[in-house]
Image: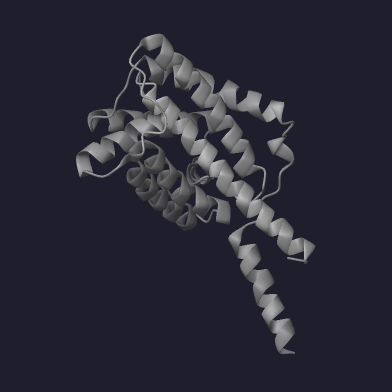
Length: 225
């Protein structure tokens, strides 16, 4: 591949997919810590038990639903948004079905695995967000709701997490001490990972699907002339 632009695009896609794989590994580490799940994973586990599907399939299905809401609310989505929706769920199922990550049976080992998993999630977040192809569906929904309700980000994010947690618990998802541990430490862990890689998300500009489609349209029109 001689075109530098094509090489760069390929690099971004490969890095993004690796990021999804790392992110999913972190999620499974927290699930297999066996001391309680993150709010959205409580919801995904509850859905999986209720519908008889895997946690990864529940994640994909909910991600698709949220992407549709993002589009309805007028939020721009990137290829990374769609990749997040699909690949993270597929990787979660791959790790869990093949029993790649151990399930812990003691609290302290479980707590250590959960904390390690949160750091791994931070690394995965850095890898896929830093390519600038769009964030996850839930982040897009959060932004859309902030714009529409004029409520603070913390209130909206907390409400989303709270609804996911309570609904998932009612559906049979595992809530425990680990749930509180994750809620309190996931922010600092992700921030630590970003700081480690000297990544400032505030300076990142995302490339969205509609921009790519417009560029493709211009290229086709130019070639026809």
